[in-house]
Amino acid sequence: MPFDTIFSWIIKKRIEQIEQFTNHPIEAQQSVLNDLLGKAKHTEIGIEHGFPDIGTYHDFKKNVPLRTYEDFTPYINKSIAGEENILWPGKTHWFSKSSGTTDAKSKFIPVTQEAIQDCHYKGGKDLLSIYYHNNPSAKLFSGKHLILGGNTSLNKLNQDSYFGDLSAIIVKNLPFWAEIRRTPSKEITLMENWEEKIDKMAKASLKEDVKIIAGVPSWMLVLLNKISEVSQGKRLTEIWPNLELYMHGGVNFEPYRNQFESILHSQKLNYYQTYNASEGFFSLQNKNKAEDMLLMLDYGIFYEFIPMDKFDGTESETIELQEVELNKNYALVISTNGGLWRYIVGDTVKFTSLSPFKIQVTGRTKHFINAFGEELIIENTDRAIASACKETNSGFKEYTVAPNYLEGNEKGAHEWVIEFTSPPKNLEEFAEILDKKLMELNSDYEAKRNMILKAPIVHLAAPNTFQKWLKEKGKLGGQNKIPRLKNDRVFMEEILS
Image (cartoon, rainbow, N blue to C red; front, side, top):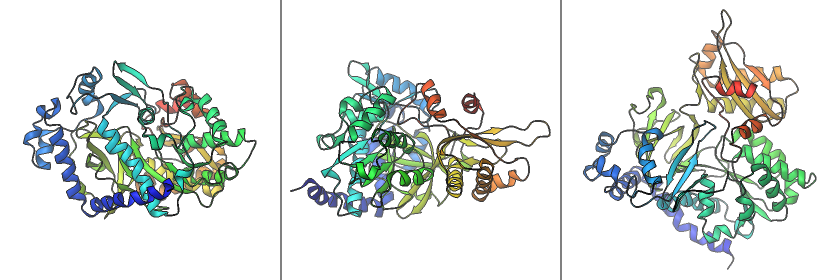
């Protein structure tokens, strides 16, 4: 029996389980919290905070403080040194090196075996299950899956502990059924030199019947353009006529959609979004053509939320899932089977549906601009630049924005550096559309725009400006992202120089 048919039959059971937690979300989350506390009650952090005595969410909030990565560092350092039962039972062997965007400091996020199996892999399998459920005639497993991750080399921390990008840990622990369908070879996948790896991936994938591609949109475009180059201009539909699914995450896809559609020229290609970070697999798209994602409630992650209009770091007041409201920005707080407890992830989300609970990622708690009281977030700028590109028939590769401060009697402004794949014919017109869309999307920006903000300053960056900047910082690769918004000019000055 073909594997596609077998898999289609297997997924029905999982679809029933997903329907169970979507129909009973609060009970599902309470069960997750009880399970996490029970398993970790004899760990160092469990004893320190009285896990055995916690019976309610109120007790949990009272006993366990909110923490950032810096607050977890002493515990993580003990785990890295090989000590057992610190944040999670037993010894943790894997640590995901993560910086999210390109801030200089790296984090070492613990990745336990439970997190790998019951969260990260479960998310990957669920996406395929949901895709087959929505597309019963899918035949993904008769072809190859091209996964573009970050730096997939692993480094030893001690005798039996390793660190690397999350993609490195995923590749190292892939189940056999996923390994046999992956392309290119592990030898190419594990290459450390990003530019050389892209070249070899492009050449190797020309010979394969690729049906799934996956990766961060900005870096996937680099690979697809390289494939077009090495194939001497062939269309992707000629190279991969059976390409059916693109799984993406990491950044908002909408600003890139037109570029993908123009490169791929495929009417049958489906785009599915995921929200998978080093800290956990949080949500995934559960409908064809949807722009939001289903919050996955049975992955060993307990969720809390901080309203962003009341955000005060670790002094913030959290709310439970049943208290959230539609279209309001929240900072995400998680407790996980990776050993993170009331951890402020740094991402912000908004709910687009409360039955079932569905979200969109709106930005970062640290990546915003509020130099003039405008409270601009990444969701605003992503939508504005997508709109401006569409209206001017242009396309962009990367961008970053920073405040241009008031000087004397001069008004302030937002300063943009944009690297285009196809620049607009009239940059001034582009800037006007950008400005107008931002005012439509953000009433605070609109109010300040008429008072102390002048029109945006837009710079057209030379080709590969951002790639060169990342390379200089040693962060060239699939999981590193450009800081889109910063409330200071540090990145802006570096890029302009």
